[in-house]
Amino acid sequence: QVQLVESGGGLVHPGGSLRLSCAASGSIFSRYAMGWYRQAPGKQRELVALITSGGITNYVDSVKGRFTISRDNAKNTMYLQMNSLKPEDTAVYYCNALRVATLVQYWGQGTQVTVSS
Image 1 (cartoon, rainbow, N blue to C red):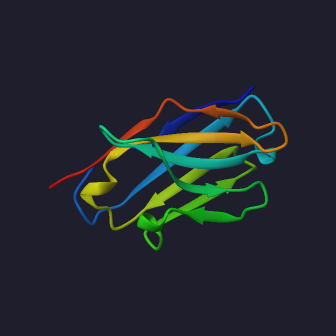
Image 2: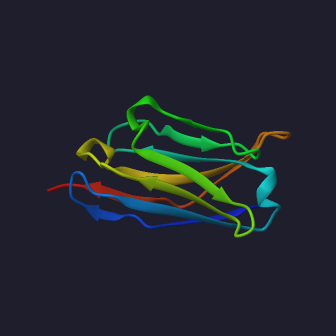
């Protein structure tokens, strides 16, 4: 069992930055692939960025060069540094943990990111 708690969301102007955090507890964090998803009103949830247990990262094209995903296994925490934010980045951002060996996954409760002038 894994519990995930996101933080760091908020309101920011276009071009601004935010850093999201996802604190994990309850299992061995380093064994999980971790990801950030987002869901805007009226849209499907989409994968934004992921980082494997080995540290390999991947991003959706729309955030490449602007967002950086990272993890600190010693702190059981994952991060998403978001720079050059755009209004279209507005969404609820969710943290996800996936145990690849079993396909069991867990979700956080989400944190709202609003990019607006």
